[in-house]
Amino acid sequence: MLNTFNQVPKHLGKVDGECTFGGLHTVTNEYGEVRAMTLTATKSHDQFMPALSMIPHSLHKYGHDDVQLVFTDNVHGDKAELERVFPSLLCQVVPVPPSSLPAPTCPPEWRVEKLETPFQINSQLNSLMESLSDIEVTQSIHLAMDMEWSVDIKNGTHGRVALIQIAYDKCIYLTPVCVLIYCVLKFVLMV
Image (tube, rainbow, N blue to C red; front, side, top):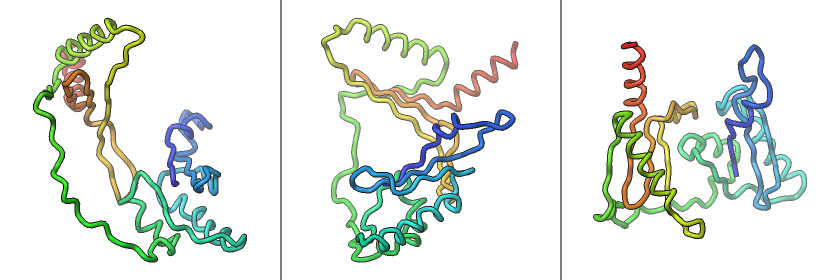
């Protein structure tokens, strides 16, 4: 499994207030044992792929099988480099056929609300918090939160959060962050 941690390096060291490392790249085997760990200045492939390229040599040296499978959260961005570093990933590949399943849809009893102003956001989230305070300690709740942002697949970098989604009590709240930034700037410029 290949993981890139962006938060850990922020706490490791700074020079003149700037982070010295941009990424901590960790590779573990099927037993959760660390096979490679590299701190890099950026999250770019050319920073951490040299460390990964040493894994096949180590596997052969100690009589282990070639890498057969890699899990990554950036499949499209990592695929070409991982196949270059681990040629065994190209052996006996069977493409997955397109899904015949229907596209997912929102259940009819759920509603979607777009929160575009600070008033809407505060009102809905305050209401949500009040409803949560009425729940007994022994009761369970089901709440989901997600964020979306743009991704540069070529460089493996991502932009700022663009959309915040909260799903609770058969309602999906969508908050485009660009609207919030616009509202804050508008308020600051008026003051």
